[in-house]
Image 1 (cartoon, rainbow, N blue to C red):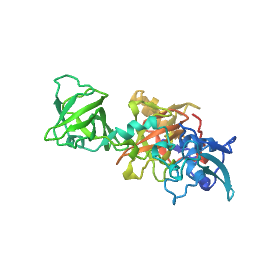
Image 2 (tube, rainbow, N blue to C red):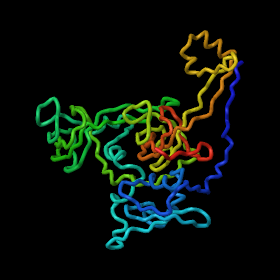
Image 3 (cartoon, rainbow, N blue to C red):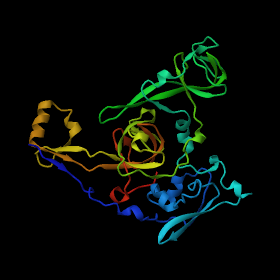
Length: 369
């Protein structure tokens, strides 16, 4: 009978780091926030583990939007009860009311240029949700393809001035463990604005990304400024773990500033700002019984069945430790899936990698890009 050996080098580590911050060697004493900075960039100047920003910042929950920082603000490192903290001296403005300006001027958690298309246009829908949406019947101009400034006929009464995206069904997302259906992406074909309301409404096309065809569906466009792009990075809960199930552009390997999809959503407790460590699951190897020969299980699977069975019956299966790949921060959550940005990639992230709460004592963080 084959033996299964589990290598659990770090399984019993206790998270003693929770209340102690270690500053990054060579950190500045003061820093003036610049346009184009992100909270992650600023935190990485002071900490090896930028996801511990809430502890360094020590946001006051009694202050409205305490985590918002603006270009020109001066951040100074101080020590309170022996622990490092950043304090902010706002840039002098013409009036006190201008200190907390519109969200558009604040420093976001991650680059808005990367995530804004997802905030405004991206959709993950439940079963049959797209089928119930308003439908494109055709256009005023008889054409195979429609372009900017064309007018489309829509089969429902829509409010004048409302902005919509024209969508076509995209890929379906499944849980890798049980192949449970989690949602379906809707691919944006165009955007438009309602110019006439009636039993059949008219939609003026504002921009085209893909071919517009009769039968495509409409969903309202969400104003990105109304969505939580200015969340505070913070570690994911210990009991929230999951898997990478997809990527932007259907890539097989994902790197820094690329988007990954995980099989956990708001129903599981996922929320924007949560930071996850990403790990390659421990691979299985088989000791063949011929001395020091070790062969990966997935290599064995490509061999002749009889040879595989003979090898497995005489050898032992060894499960290697998980391999740290990097970190990601969630920026948009749906019921059962979430989208996150890879913000620290030590190694390429792949489908079915594990995501879990980051732990510097176990894996050691690397904030370099």
